[in-house]
Figure 1 (cartoon, rainbow, N blue to C red):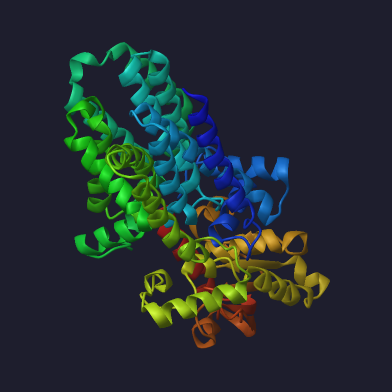
Figure 2 (figure 1 turned 180 degrees about the vertical axis):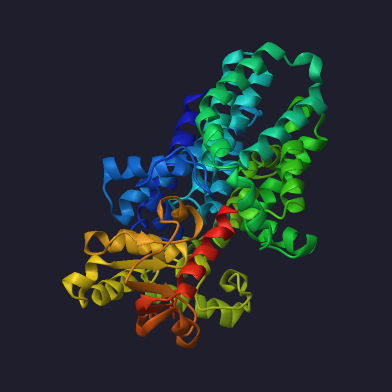
Length: 507
């Protein structure tokens, strides 16, 4: 590989890393990040709603970098930068030169979808990395027939499954695409059997855990399907396009180029893998960001396509393409990366909705338009909640504290109290998501600090004495209005409510 290509790929990757590093400490930890931090303090080979790798990565981050917001986001930022690197490598091995690599990497940098998911401590950033590197290894195997690349695919598939099970969709689509394009006779079964064995060794502990816990992953998938993230094919395609902003011009070109260019027939499986994955996600009602890992490869092909077209034109049009890619991304940057101080961010979204009437980023899962995006709102209010719960707890007498339980009805509040409450609070109980694994089957306490949304009249029958102690008042927090109840001498109805919530995830 020429040195100028290597330096170019490194340059784009470093820029990606530094861009997010500059904003990593802004606003606060996201609700999901707080949840994964809680999981990392109870390491095991599986969880009810997640694969185990994210908990291990979180524990690793805490051990080596510390417990700050900035520290927890170092690794996802690094892996996102590496995803850009492998996009550049795929571009080169698809036949692209310097211009193609620059276009593909610029598209990766300018995609709002990749900008918004690059810094959160969530499985998404690592999923994109595993999918992209897996595709790279498949491509190199097709080109070289060296078994080391297939063995690497087996390892990556295993690690990807420990990160998130959705990698099965993409890996299945890649295999189907290869069989369709080059046929099964050219695929050496011995290589694939060894790769499958490597994958099996990696995921075996998690498979045993799933068997022991009666495959909770299927229960969780069923719960997710009850809340689809789009409504019909039109909404799905709109979100697909909007999610990548101006980079849509690159990945669409890549899919078309792979399917129509005769010289790229051996690599047509890349396009088919992308198409099959997208169709499967639509059929299964998966969230749009589940398929982000399939985009880097077609973006790489798009870089090659645009290079071929632009080489036939004057230099002006080459620069014009970069302007088309970069300018919308610069305008949209505060909407996906928390670079601005929060008051300026609020002002930015107010101006956007006033002058453009474009409110898609401000539409939450409840279908209503809010002042800021939901993923920003999920970073706010948690410290206030922990502070107020701590104040309620400290007002109890030492004897009352010995028999007090904190029950957070939803996992975001439980994660926030576990992280921000620290040693000032007793262990937080929740019958929601994987908190169930270490929460008691039954609650038997004289005093309960209950964090929930229902109003006092609904809660009053649950205990002899019920007092609304406080509530979350942070103006822009998603959980604004969540109530903190102090309950003494809980009733049988309270115990039944707790058991019923547990059964939603365990039965």
